[in-house]
Each structure stands twice: as C-alpha cells, then as structure tokens.
Image 1 (tube, one colour):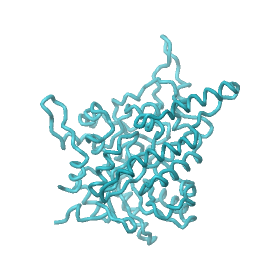
Image 2 (cartoon, helix red, strand yellow):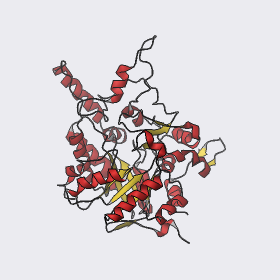
Image 3 (cartoon, helix red, strand yellow):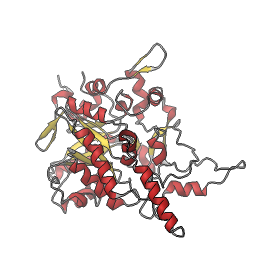
Image 4 (spheres, one colour):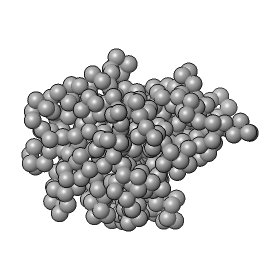
Length: 406
C-alpha cells in the first residue's frame, strides 16, 4: 500500500519526510513548533516578519523603543523635513541573528529549519534591510531560505558573496510558471538555480499571489504547468504544492503526481505550539464558510484571506510607521497611512473606520489578523470538544503524523 511516509523530499544530498510547514508570522510558527517538526524529520519555516518586535517580546530587547527614540531625536533636529523612521542596520542584524540562532542552536532531529522571507517587508529601506535579514540568517546557520511575497529580482544578489551561498537551500513561492521563469532568469546570472519551488494555489491562507481573478485559478493546473516546464527545461528543482492540502490523502495525491513534498500551514496554526492565543485558536476551530473573506486591505498590495471577525478590519488606528513601519517603502510611504489620511472624521471626533486598508504591522503583531486557508472550516472535523464546549487542540506531532497517514 502506497503511503506518504514512503516518500522523501530530496534537496541536493539531503532527504526529509515530504511535509513542509509554512512560515506563519508573526511568531505563529514558533521556535517550539519548528523544532518539533525538525525532530520528526520534516521541514518547518520560521517567519522573519517583524523580527525586531518579536525579539522585544521574546527576549526583552528594546529595538522598537530605540527606533522611536531615534526618530524623535532626528525630528527635533530637523522638524521641517521629517526623517523616515528606520531601524539601525546593525541592531537589525543582531536581532535577526539572535532570532534564527535561538531555534537553530536547539535543533535535534533529521529535519531542516527554513526561513520564510517576504520581499514586501520593506522597512523603509528595502535593499539594505533585505540584505541584512538574509545574510544574518545565513550567519546563524539557517538550513534554507524561502523567498516569498514578490519576484525577488535582487534578493539572490544580496547573498551571492556569503560563504554559505552554494550550500544553503534556496527556494521561492510562486503562483505561476511565468513568475518562476522570471526568478530563474535572475538566478541564472549567479549560476545558482533554486533547489525548490513552492507552488501556491488560491486556497492558501494569508497573502495570495494572484489578482482579482484568484477564484478562477486551480492549484492542480498551476502545479502541472510548473512541473511540466521544469521537466521540459531539464531543471533539477523540487516542486512543492501548497494551498488547500488538508490531509494525508491530499498529500499522497500530489506525491503520486511527482511532487517532492507539500507545504501546509492552517492545521498547524491551532496546535498547542502555535503562537496564536488560545482564544484565537478556538475562533479558527469554529469557522464556517461564511466567515472567510479575501480582501485587498493589506498594504503589501496582495489579496489576503482572513476571517471576517478579524479585529483589524475597520480599525481606525493611527498609522504605526514610526514604531513599526515594516510595510513602509523607501520614500516613507504606506498605503494604510494614505487611507487613514483620506478617511473623514466622525461627527463625534476621531476617524471613522478605515475600510480600504489596515495597519498590518500593528494588528498582525497582536494576533488581530486571522489569516487562514479555505480549509479552516474543516478543522472541527479533526477535533474533539472538551466538556466546557471548547475544542481540544492537537499537538504539532499529532498533526504532522496525520499528514503522514498515521
């Protein structure tokens, strides 16, 4: 009988069980979750979204406070031309190194620790901060880097001189063969094709790599196109489908179609090791189809799938670009700040709700953005209720083994 555990995800000379847990930010895919997957022989992602804020929470640093103090000092010196609030690059390097090392140094088991790196985390200095984030992760011993939320036309160039450039596993998340082809043209300049590609379909959680036509897209069709073209080009790239893969049956179907592995996330978001608060996990478990929304509220410009009950929707919070500013571009702009400015005041004072965009930096760091895949509605089918009516949450190990068919 064919089983998931009979397959291996082969990346160069390394082999893993074919289950990849996606990077869920901010600190939802915790160090504890990642280490459990690694112990069991799979691949798991840390997310490098908002690392300074995560370090402040987990390690007691004061990076956000330092950024505010620096901005206030510069503003006092030159109030007529307000500065762009930027993180100190050396402090960012130290934060990224500590964040990654905190997990890598505890690694036990045959699996691998990857980092999910979003291009759309701009931090007011896209090139400079991306270079620091990537190189610090390599310094800290990360096993692989998955480029996401963008075409990453310059990301590979930022690490080409690192001594681990040829050794670390590199991959990218795409939603079309066209996007992958663009990335391949970029990497060919450095004689370094990606080791793997995550082909993400329209049923995934969080940010989606599609336009308004996302509902017409199908993961199977995108996956088939990417795999066919990779084979036609005779490229040694592992293909990993993602988005809507809920159980061992779904996993096995793709493995039998030639997938190297599958990437999954939503089911792990409610595990005991997940960084979400218990109350949020229970909201996920109770979700129904009518509770899900794909909206254009993210300042990244990508559609985002989330639950309608997410407190971030319709918030009128002033933009938090000075303390946070992860979505702020090189000119100091942010589409939420623009939407906030354009929103009228309420008759009683203060801003009316801002519906066009949300201050993602603030809300996602406080677990007020309930991103989810479409199969969030099926979570309850895998769980048992406690006597008090709440759901008994699984461990990372339980969910991982269920994906293996155990």
